[in-house]
Image (tube, rainbow, N blue to C red; front, side):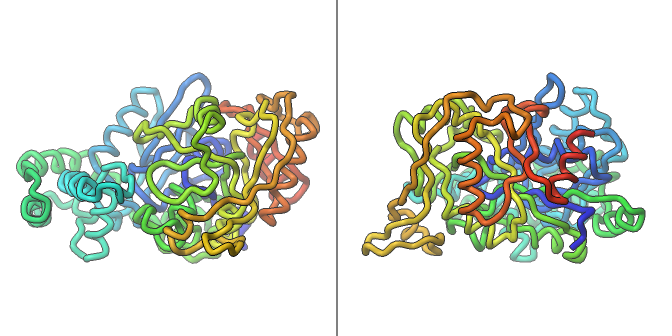
Length: 442
C-alpha cells in the first residue's frame, strides 16, 4: 500500500464534514483529486475568516501551490464550474494553472437539468430527493454512450453540432414522455460555447499528471463526494446517487492503478444525517432531532434543505467500513452532542419478522421497516467544543469514541470539535496518526 497518498471518503449518507478534513490535509499534498459525482455535492471550507462553498472544485484549491483535478468519473456542469471559479478568484484565490478537467468527464447540459426536474416530478411519494442538477440524466447518457465528454470543449468546430444533436433528443423526451416544456436550444448552445472558450484550456488528462506527481515523489490526496451509503451499488438503492462513492472507483476514474490510492480515511459525524428520501433507521423525528439540526446547522450546502438527523448508526457505519475498506475514521461534530444527558448508538436492527440483523439490508423496503436496537451511554456536560488535546476531552466523550471504535473495528484518528480548522485533534500513536498530526501542524 502506498502510504504517501491518501483517500478521504464519506462514511455515512454524505454531508459528514469532508470539506474541513480535506482542507486540513491538502497542504501536505502536491495534488488533490475529485473523482466522482458533480455539483450535487457540496463541501463547506472555512479558511481564516472566510467561508467557501465548493461543489465541483476540490477543496485543495484554497492552498497555494496545490494542483487540483476533476477526474473522468465526474459529471461537470460547465456553467456551474465557471461560477465557482469566478467566486474563488473574487475571493483572491489564484487558480490559474492549478485546476484541470479530464477530457473524459461527462458534461451536464441545460437539458439534463430539465430532465432531472421532470423525472423527479413524476415520482410522487417515491421521489429520490435529487438536487435537480442533472446528475442522474448525465450519468444515464454516459452509460448509454451518447453523452458529451469534456474534450468537446476544445473543439469549437464540432461542439455546436454535437450538443444540438444530444439536446434535441433530450427535448423529445421532455415533451413526449413528460409533457414538459422544451429547452431553448439556441440559448443552451450559446451558454455552452461561452463556457468552452474559458474551460477549454483547463482540459487535460488526469492519469498521466498523477503519475508524474508520483514519479517526482509527490503525494496525492483523493477526495470523494457523497458517502458510502449513497453509493450506486452498495447504498440504500434506489435512494442513492448515480455514481460510485467507493475508494476503488477513484482508480478507474483517474486511470491509475489502485496501488497509488493509499490508506482510506472515512469521515463520519458523531451522529447521523441524511438529505432526501430513503431508509434512515436511527432518525429522530422529535425535539432531539431538531436540537441536533439547529446546533449542527444541518442544512444542505447545495440545496439548503434541512437534513434528517438521528443517532450514530454503527450498523450502517460498520457496513461502510467493510464495503469501502476504510482504514481509519475522522469523527466530526462531536461538540454538537455536548449537553445531551444520554447518547444512543444503533447496534442492530429488528426486522418485521422478529429477526435481528447486524448488517445493512440490500432491500431498501426492508431497511425502511427495520426497528433500530440501541445501546445507551451517559452523555457529558463539560464541553468538547474547541478541545484540541485528547487528554482534555470529557471522560464520557472519550468513552463514546472508544465505544465507536469497538463497533467499527477501526481507530478514530481525527476528532473535529468545531467548524474552525484549529478545532481539531489527532488521536493515537500509529504511523497514520503521526503523519496526520504532522500535516495538520504544518
